[in-house]
Image (tube, rainbow, N blue to C red):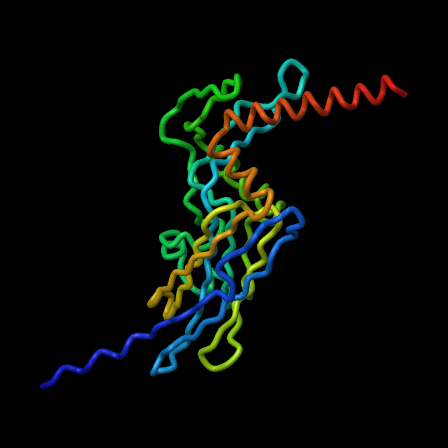
Length: 252
């Protein structure tokens, strides 16, 4: 008896209308458009999830504590592995598309982002300030993590859009991603996932570059490639500006 042939797999394809975003002094944000198509000979029910993740940035966060009647900042906690920008857009709510374990494994949704305090506890001194990195957060870990997500969401850098992906025709879909003016510079990754029956069956990855242009780009490169000379030049400029201002005031 001949075994039944396996059904053909469904595939997904997608592309960004822009792969480079130029940031200048008048940058007010951008709106990215992603188009794609689902190829499924059996026309099974499909969901599409788009995960856009920006370059990683450590997040330092502290909270107010009352000490001897005064409100002071606690020791800062530094979370590593947090993206500077993150959005999850989907055809319907993520919890309706897949189970908790699948979403956690894929990092789909702000609640499933891999974000952690360092495994070890250490002290670092930067710019004359001694910071303590706390890792043994215990039961407070979730509160600290929620605070990070809340702060990023307030800045427009973290978001979930349960209806951010729309099928515009049979098998054809469209998604719009809002990139705020505060979005970090660097390389972004867009993962486009096709779900069927609660499981990812096909995936495509596209990249996007956000870079500064013009005078801002030159200053950015100078500051990162030659920090000492940039610092000295900034100090010289500040001194010159102060001297010029004082000269004008003396003259008046």
